Amino acid sequence: MLIGLVGKPSVGKSTFFKAATLAEVEIASYPFTTIKPNHGIGYVKVECIDKEFNAQCNPNHGFCINHQRFVPIDLMDVAGLVKGASEGKGLGNQFLDDLRGADVFIHIVDVSGTTDSEGKQVLDASYNPLNDIELLEDELNKWFCNILMKVWKTFARTTEMSKAKFSEAVAKQFSGLKVKEDNVKDVLLRMNLPEKPTSWSEQQTINFAAELRKESKPMIIAANKVDMENGEKNYKLIKEKYKDYLVIPCSADSELALRQAAKAGMIEYIPGDRDFKILKELNEKQKSALEKIKQNVLNKFEYGTGVQQVLNSAVFDFLKYIAIFPASANKLGDSKGNILPDCFLMPPGTTALDFAYYLHTDFGKNFIKAIDARTKMAWGKEHKLKNRDGLEIVTR
Image 1 (cartoon, rainbow, N blue to C red):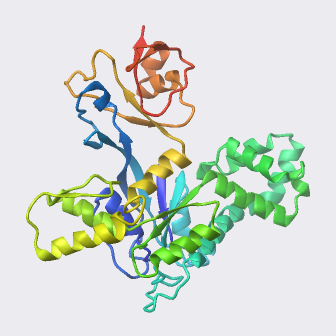
Image 2 (image 1 turned 180 degrees about the horizontal axis):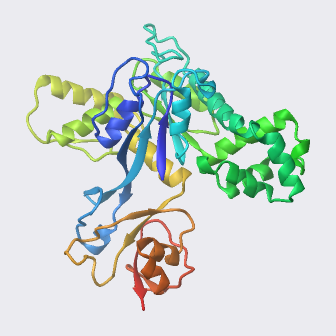
Image 3 (image 1 turned 30 degrees about the vertical axis):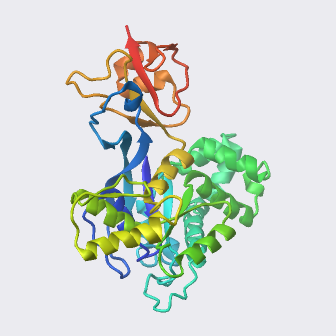
């Protein structure tokens, strides 16, 4: 699973990335600060099951604070997009090529109106950020369309003549972009297109490519810089116009400041929470900065800074992944004594047998049953797992 951060230059993508990963990336208010994609590890927040067993976990990967488990995910911050990227303008070709492996996009939008379409500063904050959403949609749709149009006439005719399964053929053509056959089937069902692809009009083909992009690369809008002067007003305008999108108010600067303060031992802060606790004496400047974040962000918006909520929504709401804990009702620790050391993110529809194979091929081949760590009930191989299940795989 890979989550891609997208948007025009200078909207705060790198700040969001650094806040989510605490990675050392270059941040500046000029276009194309990010040239090569930054890859890093972010975390989704899951209520740990350790509390139910009156225990404290010791994660092998990620971390746990006050029984809130943070499970690692892959994040990628790519070069900023400008109008014409699908035709190679700016860093367009590189930008789009970098995005091929992403499963979901987080569109970072500067809702303060202080950067224009190319990421340049607008001193009077008069730029309309709704334009950025339209621009990105258009460029991503053209990207898919260009790939399809290059081969369309031959492709459509060949699939009809060979009686090949159209959805399978399209998925194969777009396999490098992680398009699945089910994505194609869902789009065809929704659009009610003519049965023969060769009879599609040019506009129908363009619309098909656009819908395929939306289906296979879903997108969340992170309304960044919402705490600035025009931020909240523009955020509400975006929510009103783009009702089909999930739009989350966000302040990446505030999240970065809180995480850095927590890392330095100044405060206790759990990412995603709407409060923090001061741990040591601070100077007036530090106190003022933290109080400003509390008043303008944490006390004002439902999801606090929004950064953690955006990541959780991408993984759990859009991709529908579930968090699974390998656990035995009789023994929570591994051979080294680590309590509940692992938590894995699994795709929707994962069965007990799927999970056994994920842990190790031999577990799958020799699967007998799975045992629920909470209830001690036995599950068969076809049992579908749900979020926060804890289970032990029993093999022969």
